[in-house]
Image (cartoon, rainbow over all chains, first blue to last red; front, top):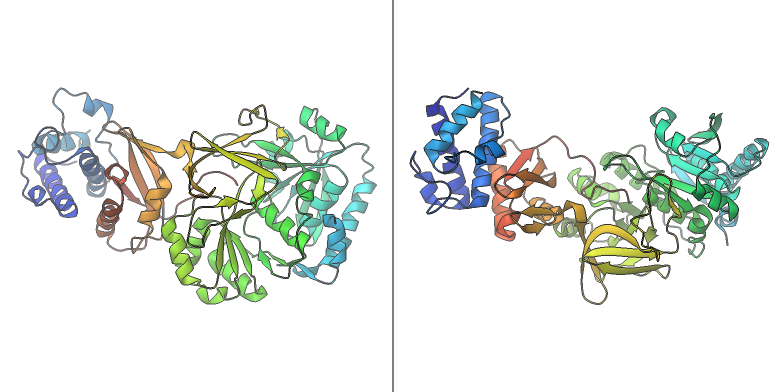
Length: 98
Length: 440
């Protein structure tokens, strides 16, 4: 179980680590409004898939739950949870509370 | 000269070393004669199917050759009888030979003689049959039937040798049997280690001054990691096969064992093991040097046609063979200069990331170079964003998995195209099977 705040912290921490790995300092400065994917976004498709895989592992470590963030259900939502940091954090909280 | 007369002629030379001590060729010839006599006492009036259960050893080798000589059908099975009810039923085995070290016992098994047309065909030709099973990763194991006499005759031209070989691949495996027949045909000593653990293998190599080690790249990687180089001083030749060799691993092996020649072998359970050469020692390309084998590449797939290929399958269609006898190996290959080839992996194993393809082996080769990685397996995972994505299972003793995960991706990013970078890095206690999941 993660609150929205905890989920947001988790996403930002992971994004910062990915930024160091990819040598993209902008990711270390990310905030709730940072666009993740799509036009003028911080990540390409491989970067986003990497972020999601690492987040799934973070969630497993934090909650003991094995979750899948990217599935057909997530992809078919009207508002993609992968568009912006706050949307992803909200989605992470929702998935871990199922 | 036939294999049996060779064995008799090598009389005083050591033949098989293992838990039983050392058995000479003369003693082995005696055990073959004893098996021949036991067979005669069964008063079988027709070629009959036998399961031969055991590991490499004098009794299993003696029985295998006695059954071949008498024109019977035999399936070598490793482990114990209770593990193989389905395989024994599939060949309609009427007798089971349980071989352990120097002893063997015969157990009757109640079954009707097989009416399979393949057995009938061999029977009509007066030929013995060797039945090998595929590993069955894709469902039921496939039973492949070789004309045993033809297979054994392919060893008739071997020169005599005094270089001891080690038996690493099993008694039920085309590669393991190839090592056995090579040793016996050339009068060399075959050393059977107590287990396949790198430390046990290294001890056996040191003790019997083994010169030739046939192994898989996966095993050689473990051998390097086990820190047993001091035991390997007698090695002169390492032959490797059964899966793609990561170039990075070959370089590490050559640096660690500078006096050893590395030779790539290639074979399939369907076509037998073929003689090959490498254009140079550091190359993962190979060239077939086998007069009994023809090859060609069709749509990136290797096709083989060999004199020692199987007569057919007991429980599968011959769809992988063309009407004119070509075997579609399912291996994806790349052609190099001067008639050379490189094995890239299994066709079905290619990973498709957003329309761009890659083979697991090329990513594994890079991941293995990262300090802290003991072994790895790359696989494709379905992903709603990119169709498939590259996942890697990593064996490591590192205390900082987070840092190693980043180091793996950084190494891949420096040396591979973007779509080949593993998105998921999972730490696992061990990786099972070989990189190329297929029996060779």
